[in-house]
Image 1: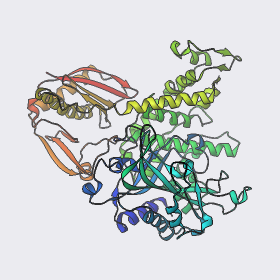
Image 2 (image 1 turned 120 degrees about the horizontal axis):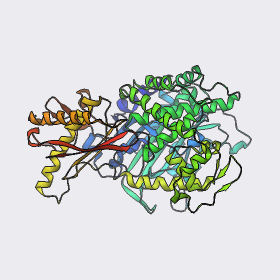
Image 3 (image 1 turned 45 degrees about the vertical axis):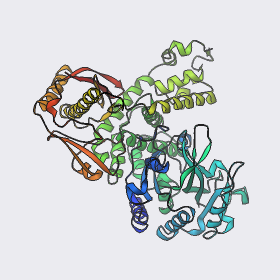
Image 4 (image 1 turned 180 degrees about the vertical axis):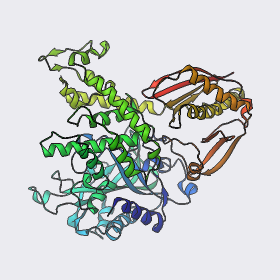
Length: 606
């Protein structure tokens, strides 16, 4: 069964037959969850409803939702290269918030697999939560599963396998029941102990049914949620592997064209070891696919947060190639060709993605050309000052975990590449450094976008100034697109009573002529006293009408569209003036780099 057919069957089953409200995938950069850097589960776009902060039935006229969600996880990055692990993947999910619970969830999942997809029932196993000192075993799920499977195919496991969440440091969570597929139907040397989660590879987990009953706070204390919720995730690539009768996810129609493109361009010629060559092919295809989707959702290469993850997987992909020089454009085009029917925005980002790939490769080349001594000299003195550095040979240098992390985070050297380049360090201490900086990144993530800056205790004069500057950002954005090209995308903004700050994707410094032209465009539109018109409409209709939206953001089904004459058309929550004539004179006071591939303009209204 082709992958597009699986998508169609899932949507028809849950969206049409079972009347779940259907949602398109949200961005890989979550807008409503500061506890994580990237979207790792289908439930994240519905987080406020799971937490009871918003009423799902009042908003959507139903408690039951479904989607196919783009996800990105790095927890298993070292396992990528085997038959079933990925960083970027898609999750088919059905959700019920205060609606149906365990009985219906298990039935719907089983019926979809057996009756709709026609999977062999004899190959299906299930697992349930065995309980611990704080929470009892999930006897209810075990009893329900006995309606569909024999008792010998229902196993129980602890929290390591049968507990889900929270997706970040806090959030909803609960026991889960996993559905596993028996790939070989042949026990390994462990005999009867060869069951789901056996390391031999006989089984693959395909669907996780999460019974979300609790909220885990900062102290890891579990509190009952206002209502019982269902959150499920069916691995798209894994179910495609099973239905297409392949031995790995990389042999499915989601990956085989990408791998064929890599092989056609002879990127891995020279590797005589077939197993090693195959492992490298899998890493390259997964990581480059993930990089394409991260960039398409507004992420750019950098040393922090999402940009740091993007740089890591891209350079890790490059490290797999046999030869130092290669041309990635055909691979990028093939990835976009495969996914554009389901994610149309990819096609419009193709040129930018290729350009960013090329620029990042050039930066990495410069690092790789440096000798060990030169690389070590790039580590700041404040990091090196307490280090005991020893020369173990002319080509191997022992460094601390903190020094290794600096080379890793600032210069993008992967662990493998650092060792290849002649560095040795404590692996466990290095991992601790990575985790420490992840926590710092998560803490800062929620503060990244300042928004319009209006506070409740602000004077009316202050609110008026911010409202004017907010409208000016819309004029500025369109002026930038007119002058620099339609690939310009908003990356962030911050407004206070004195000035606006606008971050946008662009790869080089603006010339004085360009800045002058942008000012002239904005001031021309101000002088035309254009009407600022607000219209409420369906999100998809807004996009079809040409309204700008940015895939960093998660928009509700009904959105506000602000149109400024025939010049600017953008989805926005406001606030705005009624006519541009009240804004005054627009002036750019600075323009500089904010981060790699991102420029920052500060401007005022005089």
